[in-house]
Length: 196
Image (cartoon, rainbow, N blue to C red; front, side, top):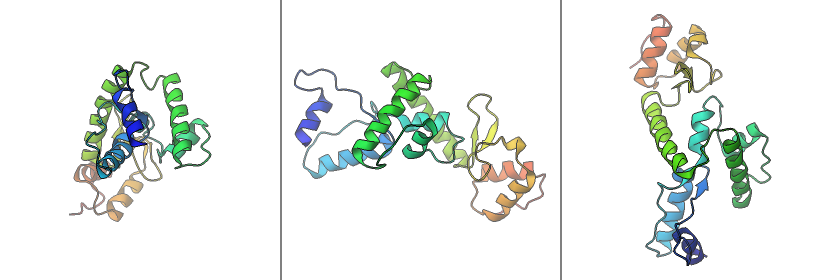
């Protein structure tokens, strides 16, 4: 099976450009797993991660307010049936349906080069967001206001969340990232003590 798969990834016998691989969390899970399996089986070829279109990046960007962005949950959000979640065929079919839906909704460019370029931009912004605020905060994708990224108020504008809720987070969660802690502390008017 591996030689046939590698032939497909290489572009087949005609030497055509290899097809674009599309997946859900493919860059973070599937491609590294496939590359580890290729290495384990003694093949020197590896699948480059750069040209892999990962729909999870677009979902994380456009649907950040959802509490869970697993393939099963995002498909439920769109009304896409997933018959046997986490089976290869069911996940591939669901990912294909999700691809079509993201294209139809204009959340993913139809030109593959533009989609890969935009994916790189969004991935970099998501990584910066995560490095700064972990999963606790994110900037609204339209007006750039801060929103909560976790908890019962996931997706809510920070300015609309009760100070008492933020104070409770400050009191209960000692390992909040420093920038999040500072923003929550400022919002609560200094009513909650800063921890470590």
